[in-house]
Structures are given as structure tokens and as C-alpha cells.
Amino acid sequence: MSIFKNYIAGEWVGASDGKTIENINPATGEVIGYFASATAEDTKRAIAAAKEALPKWAALPGPSRAAVLDKAGQLIAARADELAETLTREEGKTLAEAKAEVMRARDIFKYYAGEGFRAGGDVIPANTPDTLLFTKREALGVIAVITPWNFPIAIPAWKIAPALAYGNTVVFKPASLVPHTALKLVEILIEAGLPPGVINLVVGSGSAVGNTLAESKEIAGLSFTGSYAVGVKIYEKTARNLVRTQLEMGGKNPTIVLNDANIPLAVDIAVRGGFGLTGQACTATSRVIVEEKVADAFTQALVEAARNLKVGNGLESGVQMGPAVSAEQLQTDLEYVGIGKGEGAKLLVGGEPIPAGAGFFIRPTVFEDVEPGMRIAQEEIFGPVIGVIRAKDFDDAVAKANGIGFGLSASIVTNDLNKAMRFADRIEAGVVKVNEPTTGVALQAPFGGFKGSSANTFKEQGRAAMEFYTRTKTVYVKYG
Ligand code: NAP
Ligand code: MG
Image (cartoon, rainbow, N blue to C red; front, side):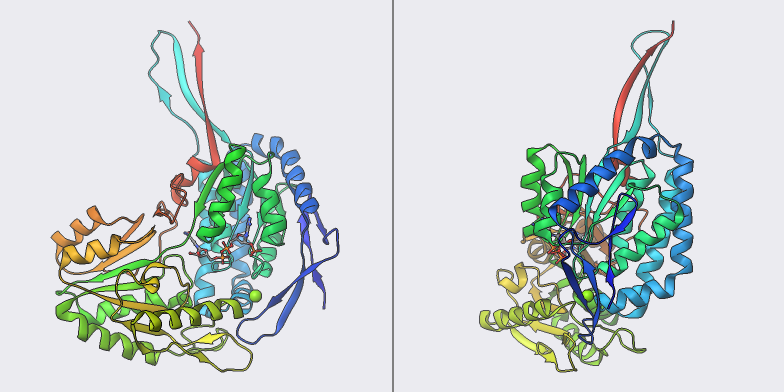
């Protein structure tokens, strides 16, 4: 089997110590390939290459950089089916979910290509006559991009595209579970015309590659999406060097269902939010907080829907939910099922693995009688597990929704405009949805969490990305 290489300073290279990472298909256990596992030294070379390429790339006119991004978007569209299949094969989500993610990546490149024509600054009234006072945005510098496995192309795209659009160069470390999609994205960027050194791919472990990036004095910014535990460790390191840092981390996202809710709609929202993407989304719904009066009807219908979901290999048609991404993630999901039972929550459906060859399958899982303080109501599981929590009334529901350490996304199902708007006012979450699942966001709008879901520094996506990927100069010009 061939070994897939890293891309450093414009060349495809193996790891300097020859080590590789094995990439597995979570639906079958099949080995997809071996990927060069970069060392700390390899990573330092990638950082140096990005530094060398920076001045020229940053000095290009925005529209010239935009042309490369636009081409990248076209190439993604042209290879969409192949990319989606690659993504499903290594991550497990269904082909439909993978295809939607690929098209989203295409749109992200299109959007930031547009930014190449727009990014600028402001003219500010000066204190003296014949003076032009203005701000000017420029590239921040070398950006380290560290991404998780659950969106193998969309998350890299929403970091790399704005980084490049605003003139930065990039060292990209994808999650070790999904290097193949990352490699194909880099191939596309090269074909689109990125000069050597502007993008560098370093597949490898968090401890070698990730640490080297986090400790580097040569990077100007680090954008990370992943778990809280890893994010906090990275922040401690980047802070020492005053490296601008963006962290988007976990969630424990609630959907509130009020008495007046349309129950089939509420169930559909919970199912899509909680079981879509096998529950492996940072914005996944893991708590449904239901007003007493409708709790029984809602829970019954949710259990029914969970039972009817078709779980299987995401490459097969008709499958609605793929496997857990890895044996380890499946183990974590099952451990939390045990914890929930031990805490006294009632398991209504699911909770057990599906023995299907070598794949890592678990059934969609619903608990009721979940109390807000239980670990299954407080900790991110990252699997298809929904805990139903009862609430006395609207105020009680909002208090329970807010009673956690995370604050990424939250939704409410109601037709009461007054309560929907009060929910938007009072909920402690960076993304708020009314009559929609906690998952699914628009790429042109700011995205980011509150509390332990984020470093609370810079938002991602939309025009908000410009704040992270540029620095501003204030220029005074006296011409009188
Ligand atoms: P993770 O274990 O934190 O890993 C994320 C990335 O960090 C991977 O590339 C990983 O590399 C790397 N890493 C690991 N240890 C490191 C270290 N010591 N220093 C530097 N980098 C290190 O997260 P994951 O399991 O891939 O993804 C799931 C998590 O991501 C969940 O918590 C989820 O909520 C979160 N997430 C958040 C968002 C958001 O936008 N808020 C979106 C999606 C996912 P290896 O793969 O080599 O270990
Ligand atoms: Mg894999």
C-alpha cells in the first residue's frame, strides 16, 4: 500500500523518521492507507517555509489571491463526488452528509474569493486640516491551523480560505483520523495555483506536530477547533508568545420544547440535531429540555423516531446514520451510557453497539429522567445520545439550559414570539436557533461559542473571520 506524503515548502515529503499513521474506515475496519507522520523537525520546516513565502503572498493584490481561491472552489465542485466518498470512507458520516459538507467547502472558497476584492480599512476624521487618517488591514502572518476529525473538509476550509484571502500563509495540521480529505484539499489548492510554502500540510500527532505549532514563536496566529481539554493546553502555550489564538471547542447543546410546540416538528429537530452526523458535531443536540405537559408525548415520539433510523455504512444508500468515527469514540459513547444508567437516568432506546462486522456502530440513544447535574447532562459525549430533561415552565427550562459550562449553540421550539425572543435574550450561547436544530450554520454569518466552548476571542466564518486573520495599522498622512 502506498504512503501518502506531507506537503512542505512546495514538495511532497515523507516523515523524516519514516513513521506513518494508519487511516481506518470506521464502517468496515478496512485500512484506507498510511500517511507520513510528521516530526517536530518536519513541522519546524513547514513553519519556516510558510514564513519565507509570506512577504510575496501578502503583497499580492487581493484580487490576485481571490483568483486562486475561486479556482479552488471550482476544483472542489469538479471533484465533489470523489471528495464526498473519501470523506465518508475515512470519517463515517453518510454520503449525503459528506456531499453537503463538500459543497459547503466549495461555497466557503467562493465567499472568501469575494473577500479578496473587499477587505480594506476605514477613513477616520482627523484632528488637523489636510490630514488623511485611515486604517489599513494587512495579513497577520504565518497561521497554524489545527482541526478536528468531525468536519474533515468544512472546518479546514473555513480557516484556510480566509487565512489565504487576507494574505497569510498556512501550516495545516488535520486530525490524525482524517488525513485523506485534508491531503486532497491541499492537492486542490496547489492545482489552483498557490505558490510553494503558502500552504503546508503536516499530518502527525498532536504531541509532535500540534505541540510544535503551539510552542512556535514564528507563528502569528493559531486557529484551533477541537476538544476543551486540548484547546486549553494549546492556549497556555500560545499565550507565552503572545500568539493570537482562536479556539472553538465542545458543546452540550440544548433544545427547549415548550408546551405550544408542534410535536412532530420538535421531534424532527431533535433527531436531526442529536442523531445527524452520528451526534458527532460540536453543535449537536445532547439535551432536550421539555415542558412537563408535552414531555410524555414528545419523548414517546422521539423514541419511535430513534428506533426507526437506519444505521449503517454511510456509503450505502438509504443509511441515515453512520458509525462512530473510531473504536475509541464508540467506547466513550458506551461508557457514558453506563454512567447515565448508574446516575439513575432511564435508558429508553439504544445504548448498545451494533455488531456489524468490524464497524464501530451504536444505536441512536435516548435517556429520560435526566437531572441537570448528572454527568450525561453536563459533559460532552460526542455520540448519538440525547438526554430528556423535564422543566416546570419557560423560566425553569432556560435556567436548566444555561446551567452548564459550555455555550456553543441552543435552540427552542415554540410559536410564542414573546418567549422565542426572550430565549434569544437570555440564553448563554453564541448560536441561537428558533424552530431549527442546534446544528447547521450559515457560512456567511459569525460562528463561535460562549463560556467553555470558546476562547471567547474571535469569531469564525463570514466577515468576522477578517478580524482574526488581519492586523490593522493606523496611518496619519499630513499633506498640507
Ligand atoms: P481533539 O482531540 O481536541 O483534537 C483536535 C485537534 O487537535 C486534532 O488535530 C488533534 O490531533 C490536535 N491535538 C491533539 N493534542 C494536541 C496537543 N497536545 N497540541 C496541539 N494539538 C493537539 O478533538 P477531536 O476529537 O478531533 O474533535 C472533537 C472535538 O472537537 C469535540 O470536542 C467537538 O465539540 C470539537 N469541535 C468543536 C467545533 C466548534 O466549532 N466549536 C467544531 C467541531 C468539533 P490528533 O488528531 O493527531 O490527535
Ligand atoms: Mg479514518
